[in-house]
Image (cartoon, rainbow, N blue to C red):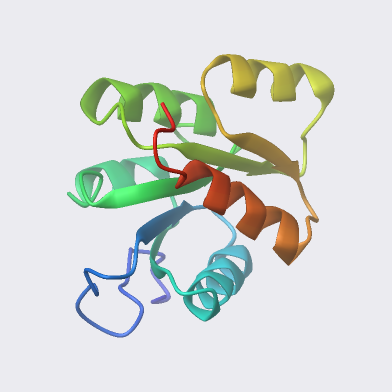
Length: 139
């Protein structure tokens, strides 16, 4: 991850055998930690500091799962999910948030999110949500 927060491939070209998981969070330490975790679990990962940067990066079509913070400057996670559903409806979303209350959870799940994980969350909870998002036949 570079200091600007722009998306960065984990070490170079995407490996087609490894599913691409995209991360959008305005906290650089969260982006770095998630990319490290995802790589260690066998995924390729890209990360962005904001929703607009992700949408303009041109990787949504290759993204197999999006992990997004709910609250970010500019476009929030719900707006990002809506935009992504219009352009790439098959990309599953896992939300993460320090503000993961029950109304937000219900809203996220009603909009088709795989899960909403409250920060801090365990590595196993996140990886479980990503694996569920990648299950064959998932809508």
